[in-house]
Length: 516
Image (cartoon, rainbow, N blue to C red):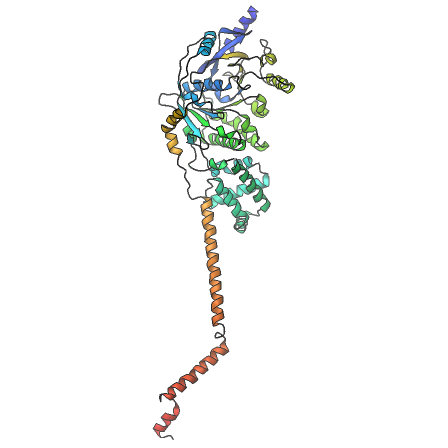
């Protein structure tokens, strides 16, 4: 056993010693005991290879998120964390040493230094923090179609709508713009659109409209609009040189999975489109932690899953790392799971035959090891303990190690309401994104156009009505025969009047001249 232990210690040292910048996340455990001198480090160079943090409720996943975020911030790497449960805000405050922390550090070694980290609170809704929005135009026709789960014909319609709006300088800022254009192309503007862009199937516009309404019912209206969030604001460094930890408070997203997956895909697409190629970086430019990651995939269509998989594959070349946190590794599609380099597996619970099967499948996702019975130990890991494997600097998986993790230095609890108010009141981003901008866009332009057309039609109808009335009044006298009879009668009357006044008539003239 001693030889095995020595072999194990050497294996850990060889597997978890890195040349580049790194930070300690724990110490290896062998035969139920912490092995002094077998520390487990995490290399920053491979943090853009993505990762998974999995485990049952109460096993320490959230604290692992804190430890990783703290280490990245210390290394001047900005972090974005999706706070689904509302328990991550404590990173902004220094922790407090207690008996559990003292006991842990006595086992794994190290000194406890309570530290608060630079935090920016963000929000997709009415939660406290800087509001994150995006315009429909920024999503583009392809992404909108994927989100709505459209077929090829419907995708073509959406692409045509975007083209029409671009050609006519009608910005699509929010969903009411998109709905207005859909209504316009299926009614008043159908002839105009078909003349320029081709035939439109009314059934397609109806289907797309229903799917947009479904998205609106999940509260998507609060996300679409201006001012749109700039990704550069996620990649800031604090005044003391540490990476800013951005905490996106999405506690109200658990019952709106489609909106959450919509936001995530748009954010990833925006990061990929905006950032330049980074190549082989010494440390990532930004790391995202997605808590309760099953929400991203829960209601995603096959097309949307394919899009997510593609973005995850490509975005690491931009220096972006993505870490999914979930209770069960099977919550993550296999095609995405295969892209994840770092794996932190906390304990799983086996209450049923299905649970035991899940544990066996989870164990098969890790490198084989002669030092652990992974299937059995997965159900026995203590709180704050996990199996860990990652990619080394050469892209080779490190040995699977049962690790007792270091405790977070920040508060392992949430901020109070007054502390949150204090953070928000000092935030430059909150002031930057607090005011909603409703510039003239497709909705207003089409409304004006329809109102103008309605006014014109009303004027034309009023003119026709006036013409009819005038025609009735003048119609008898406009007849040529009647006009001639009128002129004759007028001449007779005139002559009679003149004659009566002694001013006309040939008879009087003739008398004066002696003709009679």
